Length: 356
Ligand SMILES: Nc1ncnc2c1ncn2[C@@H]1O[C@H](COP(=O)(O)OP(=O)(O)OP(=O)(O)O)[C@@H](O)[C@H]1O
Ligand SMILES: [Mg+2]
Picture (cartoon, rainbow, N blue to C red):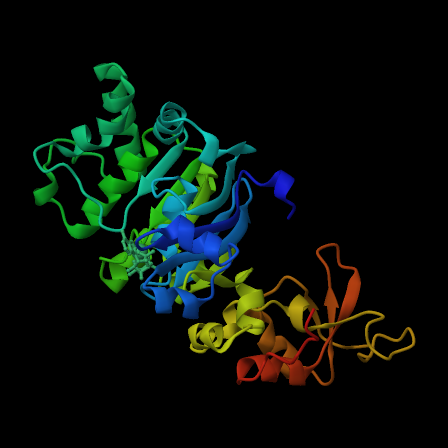
């Protein structure tokens, strides 16, 4: 992806806490080491992060507690003022925007669901969802109609006149989600929106979220520290460690080629076969040492490149030699060996393809 097609991007963003963060940053040429920060008593919450988010993409930011996820995402909406760096929304530098412009942007273009979401306890569900529209100055009828639609969307029709305390945790979180969607944001920031929920409800909420996204096609930055959640939801995952993004890529890429021990630790319990596609472990035609022959026998099993290994493994392993791989149009694009499949299914799996 190139920076021009991004709806949101940032360049070398730093957020440092301490006595004189700007002075400290300057003293170290804009790139202080972690050791220097420790020695001088500064906390580098975000350390030189650059990234791009494409329209319609779900970018999941993950990392351990304290790795800087919330701070980074708040820098992207300038709820937290970065110590240095640049943030662009639709090509416009947010750090140069006036307070008034920022407020407008946040009110009309951005939706946020916070880690510790807060519903207004003395307002009904409907009034809570309508609240951002009230702030925008919308007429009562208009905002209540829209709030009703949003509640319908998140499956809470009929609960309009309840108070938050009368709802379960999951239902309250849905109200928070409906509220953040009420202004029809183009950019949707969600900071661990499901972390307070028990696992079953959490999975339901993830399904619900994917269903919503299939309809709404928002551009989303979603924070979680749960890798399973990341894999279910993400188009791309950015993994943070001590304020830096140590790896960013598609889930499959991260699972197959974790770049550091920290990332490897996250991916070690993931069932690879549900993520990895046949295409990513095949030997492309012309890529092996064959001279035109695709290496599979004439009656070889055929699988599709975009199939997940979980679905294709049975067929491949039941066959004799390597299986033929075809693209969506049925054209032969490569072969996949039984060894490559076994290697992904039973560990290793990182060396089945040359590193890019
Ligand atoms: N206002 C602040 N003043 C000082 N330090 C802060 C402040 N806000 C955040 N930090 C520090 O910055 C670091 C990153 O915090 P942040 O909240 O971004 O982490 P996180 O990855 O979101 O963690 P969690 O998963 O627990 O929410 C932490 O060390 C935190 O203590
Ligand atoms: Mg956080």
